[in-house]
Length: 220
Ligand SMILES: [Zn+2]
Image 1: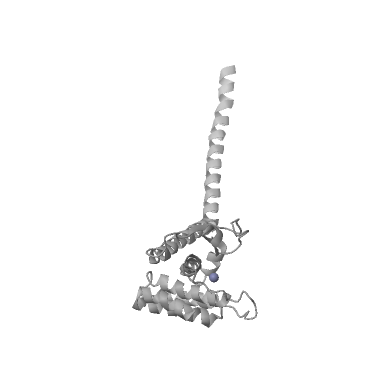
Image 2: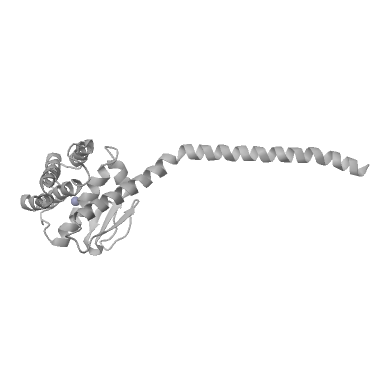
C-alpha cells in the first residue's frame, strides 16, 4: 500500500517537473529573442566599421606601397587609449609610434552621412603618416590639413571610379569636417576648402597617380 501511495504521489510531481522544464526552456528562448532584437544591429555595425577601416587602410597602403618602406600600423579603439603621444581620444596619427588610431564612435558618427566616411577618415590619417615619413608636411596647421585632404583624395581614386555615387557622399563628408574657427590654431579649413582639396587630389589622380600626389605637394 505504501508503495502504491508513493507512486501515486510521485507521478504528478514528475509531470509538473517536466512541465516546469518546458516553461524554463520557453522562457530562455524568449529572453534570447529579446536580446537578439535589442543588440544585433549595434554589434554587427561595429564589426562593419572595423572591416571598412581595415579595407580603407589597405587601399591607402597599396597606393603608397612603392614609396613607403615603413608603413604605419593601425589601431581601432573605443573612447580612449594610451600611446607614445599620450592619451588619445579621437582618430589621429601618432608619429612617435608610427600608428594610426581610429575611434569607433567617431567612425560611427561620420558614417551617418555615408559609410564611405570611414574611407575618407582613414585616408586622411594615412596622409599624415606619409607627411611625417617623407617630411613634406606643413608647419602651418590649416595647410597641413588641406594637404592631407588632397592626398586622401588621391588614395581613394584607386577605390572609387569617377562616376561612383560614393564620391558625392565622400565630398559631403569632407564638407562636414570643415570648421569656421579661423582664429584657432586648430583650424583645419573651411568646408569648401576641405572639399576642394579632396576633389583636387582625386581629380589629378584620375589623370595620373603620380601627378595626383605631386600636385598635392605643389598646391599646399
Ligand atoms: Zn588631420
